[in-house]
Image 1 (cartoon, rainbow, N blue to C red):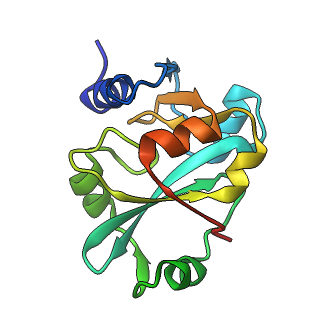
Image 2: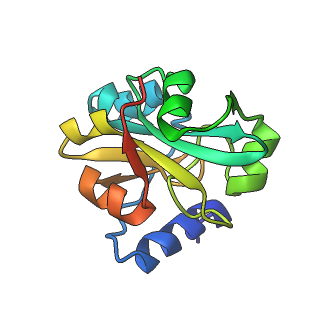
Image 3: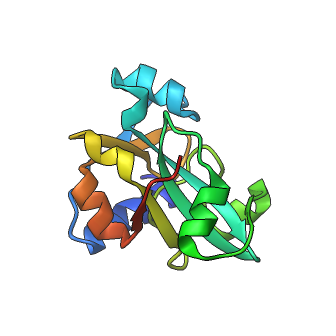
Length: 155
């Protein structure tokens, strides 16, 4: 039995026709650095799911764990207004998942998503799977396919 957010991610992976590669750890991996250390992979291969507030609507940016997102650059490329970091309550309300464990999918409603192009440099990516204990592996191409994300440089 999985916690509800992780079960939702597993269900979303199956619905998208993606392989269920969810791994549950015995200790938390709430940051990209902690996840990379635990997995023995490059920090840049960790896919951070960062939720931003775009005029009251969520914007999910899937960014490399080694990237600092330039929200002005992203806003200019999307042709949108100001993008602000979302509060933990905003993130939970729109994703059903807590900050530090947000997955690229498995949310109550589809969220507009941007995919950091630099993640394509890695054959295997790791992303949060809905809580602080779970992650899943995926290729860049498959992540792009299942999220329908807009591919952009984000830094």
